[in-house]
Structures are given as structure tokens and as C-alpha cells.
Length: 251
Image (cartoon, rainbow, N blue to C red; front, side, top):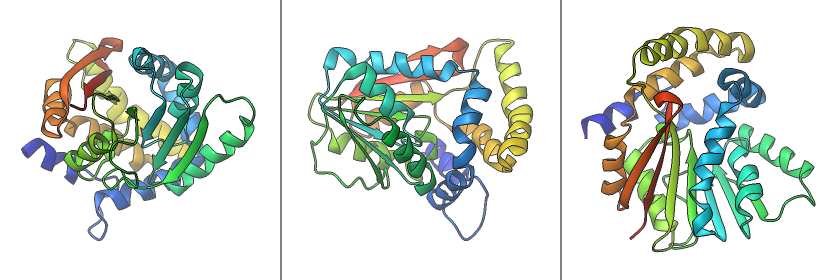
């Protein structure tokens, strides 16, 4: 409970009149225009490899109806269409700014997608779908931003069909010397400077570091999945522990 409480208190702007969800929505609306460019520059493109590895875990399940929570500008949705070829993919996000970009990207994919792709504005903690709607769910670099981690994971479990997987891709705290020290310097000091120069909002990238530090990663996140009603959780560290893929199943 202590870890969960700490994560919910880490907010982008630390204002007294807005809760975490409101601040996260504001933050992504502010940086949405530069988000994709910054992601490519700051990750050196390696985030695409991480996403492909995450989606590879879903290939044996052949999901027909896929949900992508905290979809942002739709990277996971478009890649899932190419990798999994489901019948339908629904992306949901709090930020209208991010979704506007996702929908513009979608218009350029007309006639090139195999699935029905849809982007909706909504809250991960109160998903607007019936119980048992989806065959699989993904969330990429988004669970740190849930205002209530337990509620968000529980909602994702609710809308899955029995036996269906959830796959989470999220930053972690490296534990190997000197990767841990280099990661700390880069995320704590260099990344906010680049983010400030490019997007004009350095605070958003300081929040990235702070939320990663507060996030219950590895075995601790597996326990959060179990508390939310999932079973058989496991994780795979990537890139020397910079991030990890988690997978678990609805009973």
C-alpha cells in the first residue's frame, strides 16, 4: 500500500488544485505536438524493438479484439495491426491532444490496415466497455500515470475475456553497475533539459524520472497484478534493465 500511495502522489506539476489524472492529461496535451519526435530522439529508436517484443508475446494467443490503454499517439495500435492482424484494435487515452495526432496518423493509414482501428478519449480507471469485451490488452509506458494503479489494472482485467492476457511495457530502475548510475544521470538531469528545449516543458520530463523511481517494478509489479485479480504474472527485463515486459492472465 505504501508503494501505491507514493506513486499516486507523484504528479507532473504538483499543483494543489488538480489530482494526478488531471495533471497527466494537461501534461500530455501540452507536449503532444513534440511527443513522437522526442520519443525517437530520446530512445534512439529502441522503443520500437521493445514494442515488437511485447507484441510477440501476444502472437500465440491470436487476439481478435485488442485494447490498448494509454494509447497516446497510437504507436502500439499501428504496430499491433501489422504484427497481430486482429479484427479490431481500440486505443483509449485521457489526452485529447495525443488522440488528435493518433487520428491524423490513422487517416494516412486508410486502406493499409487489416484491423478496424478506433481511438477513444477515456479513463483507464473507468473503461467504457462491457465486461469480457477484449481478447488481450496492452499498456505501454502508461501504468505509471494511472491515478489509481489498482483500479486501472482491475478495470483492464474486467474488460478482458477469461484466460486473456494483459501485456505491460514499462520503464524500470536498472540494477546493474554502471547502467544504474548512467540511467540516473540521463533521466534525472539530461532528459529534462532536452525535453525543455524541444517541447518547452521540462517539468514533464522531470516527472518521467520521478514516476519511474516511485513505480513498483519487477516482482513488486507482479504483486500488483495479482492484487488486481490476474494470475501467472511474469516479467522480462530489456536493455540491461532500462525497461521490462510484464504478462499476466485473467483467470
